[in-house]
Image (cartoon, rainbow, N blue to C red; front, side, top):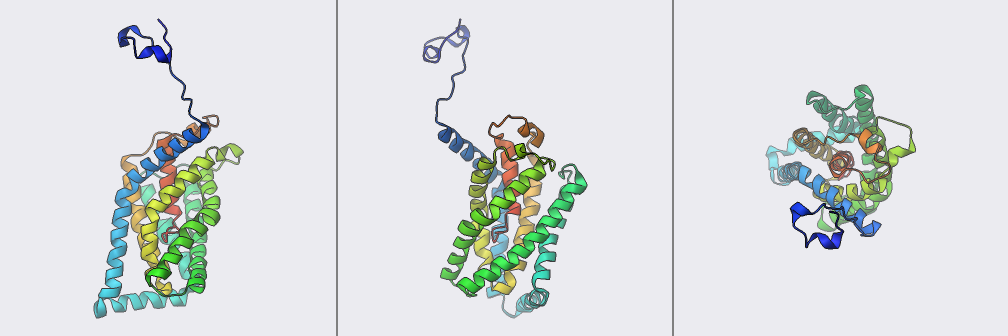
Length: 287
């Protein structure tokens, strides 16, 4: 016995042969639902790493501003190393803390994807380039907003970082690169299927994760911002990798590519967003 949607509620379940009712919501409503689903999944998996990383950042602030003679020599040494190293320090340290060490952890926990060499090389080279980008981003903001660590200056830098640099300059480059990597480095336009969902949900996830971390970084003098960013980034990367190991999605990038243009599976998209928010913090400032 076949029934339509309006008849189902009046028929006993054993006697009813249920017919699927199409969702008549507009494409925009469906898209927003998908964004909400992927954001919820991503934030759920990253809430512990985000919290711990923020606590690490607050601890660093307390050590710097309240540590007195006990911690001052260590921060002075770090400032001196950064000042002498300049952009080379940013390149090497960000490559190490954002690329080499997290990739080694992924390999050790069996989470590094095939092709192994290509993925490892991609991660290392990308973070080397991002290290240079972070160096000049921080230098530009110091020139534009000043080097003070007062509330107004920190707020200006966070707003510029998260709502100008991140969505309009960084994300449009990083998200396609991450999608290309997750597709197995295929040179096909289909690799970008679902880009709008990746971008929108990824940005919301990134804001929720990195605005606190970004605020911590800008609470330090300019010469210490890159080192502090790398410390927070590394702690976040380790924890998100361990969390992902316990709850990794089964949907592969190949399966997503075969969806024929449908929106990506939320669990797979959450993985993409988690990876993007790690890498995109470059804003932890918030990348």
